[in-house]
Structure formats: structure tokens, C-alpha cells
Length: 164
Ligand code: UDP
Ligand code: MG
Image (tube, rainbow, N blue to C red):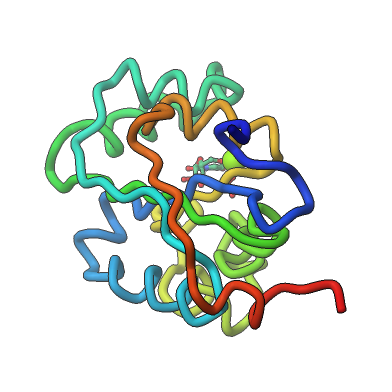
């Protein structure tokens, strides 16, 4: 069996993508799913939840101590809107997924990216995507776990990513 975040650089690579509470409130869940689907990626995990404070603190552990940290954890976990978590699989999906989302600060997001199309503020940038294979491993384990990820045979796969 393959590791939880797949094998980096292959068609089994996986990333954790989330629509944060502001994105759910804005009605952007379908838009995110559409953009990843039409790009040719395969949805292998999907859930809607209000994450606990502890889960969000772990997820954003590297940002602890930053001035926006407590506000970030509260808005993610206060339950005013849920988070929709997804696991997407396919060739280079970690880096390609970050490109589809756009830069962290919408001011720097390229036109046509999700954040440039829908966001204006870094504190309400609506989406999350793992930034490395290591992060994807940690985040898929944290939000889903091995049993909640479901690989399936996509009939079009050889037509979407092949080396020849
Ligand atoms: N964030 C914020 N203010 C900042 C930087 C980050 O509110 O000055 C929030 C924002 O929601 C961002 C998240 O913290 O998406 C995680 O920051 P990171 O640098 O990891 O950006 P991302 O990986 O989400 O692009
Ligand atoms: Mg990040």
C-alpha cells in the first residue's frame, strides 16, 4: 500500500485542500471541487466538520506565536460555519493545488486563481492547501486518517497523466 500522501512526483501524490469557514459561507465549495476536477485531479477524501481548537492549533502549529494566530484559530473553530476538507490525488497535485489557490495574500495572487477571483484579505483567503509532501502527510493524517481516504480507479487516468 502507498503512503497516506502517496508517492511524491507520481500520479499517486496527494494533498489536503480545505475550504475554510469564510469560503463555505461564501458558497465556494462547488467552485473548488469543479476547478480541481476539471484540471484532472481525483477526489479521494471529502468531509464537512467544525474542527476542534486543538485540531486547528496542530494544523497551524508552525504559526503559533504570530499576532494573528489566536484570531485564526478562533475563526476556523468557532462553528459559525464549518470547514470542508478534501484530499485530491494526481500528478504534482501539491504544487499545482497551491497554484490553483494562488498566493497567501490575495494582493499577490495571480488573476484566475481562486484567491484572486474571490478574496481581498489575507485573513479571509477562504482556502488551504498543503505546501509540501511532508505537510500533506501530516495534514491528511490529522484531518482524515488512513481509513477515510478512498482511492479508486479513475477510467480517464491514462488520458490525463502519462509520460509518453
Ligand atoms: N494568515 C493571516 N495573516 C497573515 C498570514 C497568514 O491571517 O499575515 C492566515 C491565512 O488564513 C493563511 C493562514 O494564516 O492562509 C496560514 O498562513 P500560511 O503562511 O501557511 O499561508 P497559506 O499556506 O494558507 O497560503
Ligand atoms: Mg500554509
